[in-house]
Amino acid sequence: MRIVWSPLAIQKAADIADYIAQDKPAAAANWIKTVFSKVDQLKSAPEIGRIVPEINDKQFRELIYGNYRIIYRVEVLQISILTIRHGMQILPIDEIKE
Image 1: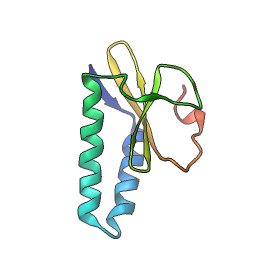
Image 2: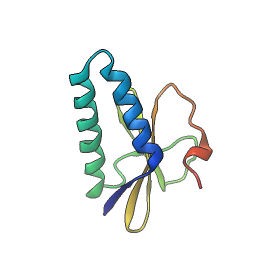
Image 3: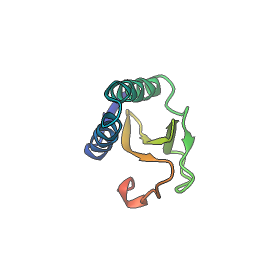
Image 4: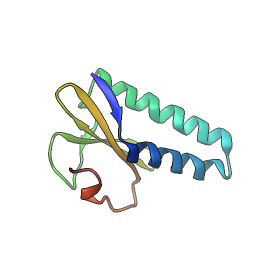
């Protein structure tokens, strides 16, 4: 399966990395590298993430990495990375459902 990142997910990842880099640039680079590595695992095992509890639809899943939720949708031929949120933030459903 191929992985497609939404513009929102790319922006969220960049914002989080920028925030981390304010104190620890090396940690920010490692955070981004690990996020992409975790997402890459979805190619062979798209359902490793849990179902997003706010939606309760098996298409919408999330990987947890540290304090962050990587929200994605499993589709027929691809996996769409929809957003990345801090676990303490409320997940706006309209941010991920079209």
